[in-house]
Image (tube, rainbow, N blue to C red; front, side):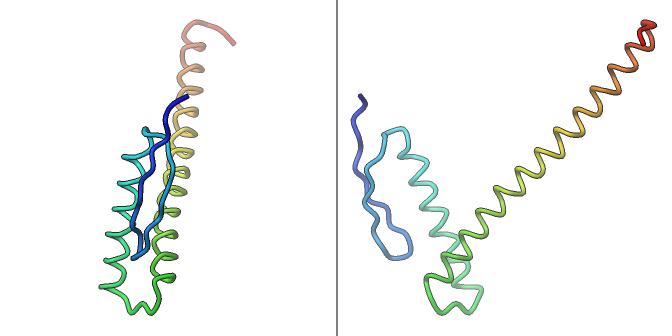
Length: 98
């Protein structure tokens, strides 16, 4: 059983102690850094009264990116399937298959 790693992440001026698998460390540290950077950007560019508002805006930004990627991939898959069907029909027509 792999050893667990104890780390502390700072997000919005709070420290969050976590016990994680070592393979998760890099991703979690990058995520925390991205949240911090985006939070600072929101604080600088918008009149924000509360850290909770900043964090909610960060969560919305990151979640919308994930959702949009899913939509884009779904549309890309649909287009690829349609092209494959058209190609299959073309091959069938050239081979005389109905």
